[in-house]
Length: 388
Image (cartoon, rainbow, N blue to C red; front, side):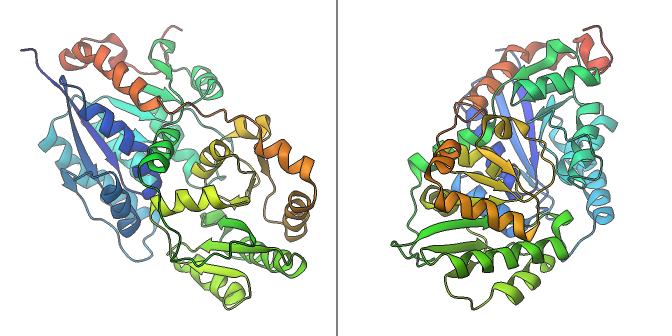
């Protein structure tokens, strides 16, 4: 029997776990592939929720999370400790996802070990190195040392071509978050009793936790939510509050104990998916929710000045609104009062895929199994700058 392809999947945050879980499940179905999982636990509690949902038991766990850890500590810990994991696992290829510090540091560690890297959700760009920070540079660095590029959209493909990646190893797959969302909605419908929603009110769901929104921007968002609740008696706001102290403090100070504003702890993915489905409007600075919510027919207002996911903006399902208090209020007010405007966003098509991205990635790895095992693929010698 021919040698099996060993694939090591590495991730550390809840969003990564959500998007990599369906890839792992698909790889596990293939007789010719041995998938292993290493978690860095960049986000411990929220990561474990997803692992339990998808019934994934990590083969390796770095458990690096520290209270209020900075980027220097996080990067150096992942970079150094992944060396030992790579030596133990001895994979033929390492899969990383997206734009986290775990992804970037793991990619550099794999590069130092001369192990090929497959980048899931490759090619996203804002072309602003400080926005989002540090994610833009994380994904650029990862793409620079990757050998296989699993791009979610045609725009992502073109971004990779523009940077010099070999077209033969860029694959448009769709986004695996749609796979995870559809799997969860179909198999793990959750009761929302713990939130105590008023069924007679429309629900506005908000998530906001990015570093660039710490301080005044997040305070502006909170005050805009107060304005919305004050002037619309038929709505309620639900805010699952990120555990970071920079989020907890202003949110609880401004929004705590306010009528029709429900602050909850971060939700497990299954109830969160159910909450998205129940919501009328979603406000977020998250990347993944920009991709997920359109599949559920929900208008999304993005609390950022730029996005690496412009496809949904172009399709009309998402609008970039930043963190200006008056602008947030104005757009939410319009969605609540103008039915045609609401429908134009809710009924637009989702550009991020059909739920088969993980299968496509597994197919690609299976088709390239012998090249990866034998390391005779010329592309692996220089992932960038080939003849296109």
